Image (cartoon, rainbow, N blue to C red; front, side):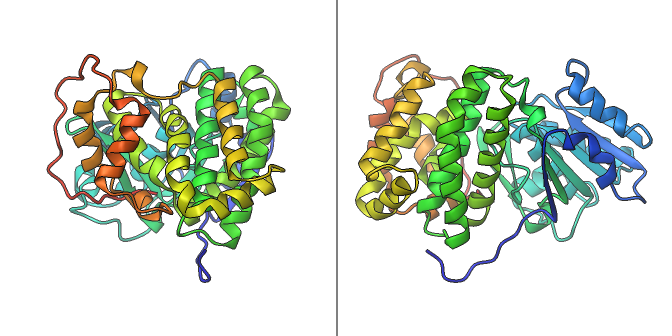
Amino acid sequence: MQSRYDLKYPATIIFGVGEAYNIADHIPRNSRTLLLCSERFSRDSKFLGIREKLAGLDMRLAKISGHEAPLEELERVVALGRESSSQTIVAIGGGSVIDLGKAAAGIIPLEGDCADYFHGRKKITDKGLFFAALPTSSGSGAEITCNAVISDSGSRKKQSIRDKFLIADVAIVDPLLTISMPPKQTAYSGLDALTQAIESYVSLSSNEISSALAEQSVRIIFDALPAASSNPDDIQARTAMSNGSLASAMSFSQASLGAVHGLAHPIGSLLSLPHGLVCAILLPHIFRANICTCRDKYSALARACSLKDAEELLEKIKLLLQQLKIPPDFSSFKADPSHLDFIVANCRSRSMLSNPRTLDDNEVRSILLEAGFSCNTTKLEDIRLIDQPRMHSDV
């Protein structure tokens, strides 16, 4: 655990049911042009209510697909923002929507294409547009972080545009915005938050503050996620999950993550699976791989959750995954040994560096084989190794 650390969060974090409707109070007074990014333009009454609160501004709308934050979609949002001379960006949505808005806010005032920033040819060197993030899921934590995870469909590469200047100016966490999230998405996003909290707790970059937040997050999510998943309209469970997700994000954004997230990006890109589902499947496998190195920390987290030791914590995790109908491995998703080279070549992110146990390529392959990549199923087409540096930016 680090004895010296810096904490970087949005300047303002607001939590509460109905707080999203006060968004106009947090937009700078001298900002008259606004770009609103969301996937919920016409079908969600809550979104329409928020949009009405911003009606006094010269507003352009950027409809986001809400899936994987593709580079070409970021280019479109940036072009729209530059064309309309936007001064403020408000992103309402899940992690992909918020990441697109976050990256656009940083890039719009600068020169160059988004690909320049994605591939590291250019850097974000100053504060961009005013950016407000309103999450509609309890999981990604994108409203807190300084990175935007973007995917390149051509190379299948998924990585972060990352800089301290990308931290949101205001994050409004309103549990009411998560009410319409379907049960499966609720489960996947909640399990992502759980994984983030557990990984940040045992991360080599953890500190006393991040660890305390992670403990709180894990306790809340264990209690609240089954209820939120089974009853999407349970505002009490939704509020608890929003709290748990916020604590998780405040932890991992400072302490980094681990091997689950290092592997989740290339696996999710290859198999086109929801990020939270990939993390949930990987979590027990990485837990078992790490336990020889950080049994004491796992056991301390277990005791914080009123459990006996690391083994009981692992059983608690597995029981929750079974309850939420998460498969034990990737064998049912066309996972194949031919994918191993791609995953190994593209997993060496910052998250892998923070994992408590150093995993060499052979160990990663063994974990993947255990996790279902030993099956000879139908192979995905056009899988190419990426001729890029093995280390890329990540949380």
